[in-house]
Length: 192
Image (cartoon, rainbow, N blue to C red; front, side, top):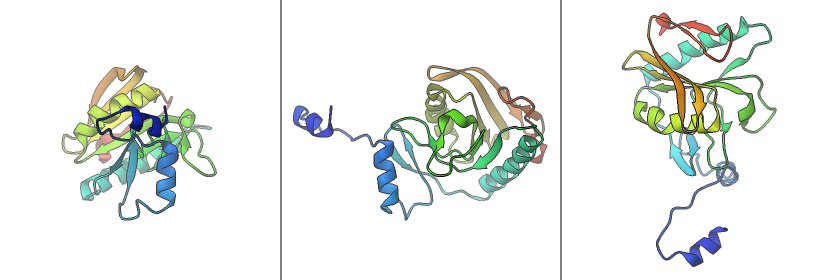
C-alpha cells in the first residue's frame, strides 16, 4: 500500500516509516548536517548521542585491539568504525565498531559481509540492549557485543533466533573475550 492510499484509508494520524532509500536521499540533501551522527532504526531517524571521553576512550582502544586481532588471522575479516550497515528496508544502523569480510567501494556495508557488531554503551545501554539486540538478531547478525562502559562488562550474544540471541555471556573488563563466531578473534579487555 502506498502512502497516498494509506492516508486516504486512515482517519487517524500515523507516523510515516522512512525507508533506506528515503533516508539516503535525505542524507544526500544535507538534511542531517547539523547532527553529528544519525541512524535509521525500524523506519525512525534517530540522532545519536554525543560521544564523550569514556565512550571515545573505550571505542578507540577496543578498535585498535580488534584490528590487531583481525590482522593476526590469516585472510581474516577486518575491524571498522562507524559504518552504515544495510540491515533491512527500514534500518541502517551505524554500530560503533563492526567486523566485516570486505567493504564496498561505495554505499552502505552489505549485511552479508558483517560478522560481528559492537555498540559502546556509555549513555545508551538500555537502547543497545532493548532496541538493537532484537533488531540485530532478527536481521541475522551472527554475534553482537554491548560494551557497558559504566558497568565495566561486555554483554556478548550469538546464535540469533528470531528477535533474540540463543547464547549469551558477560565478560568483565580485565578478562579475555573470544568471539563465538569468528575463529581466532580474541581480545584482552584489561586494556579497557
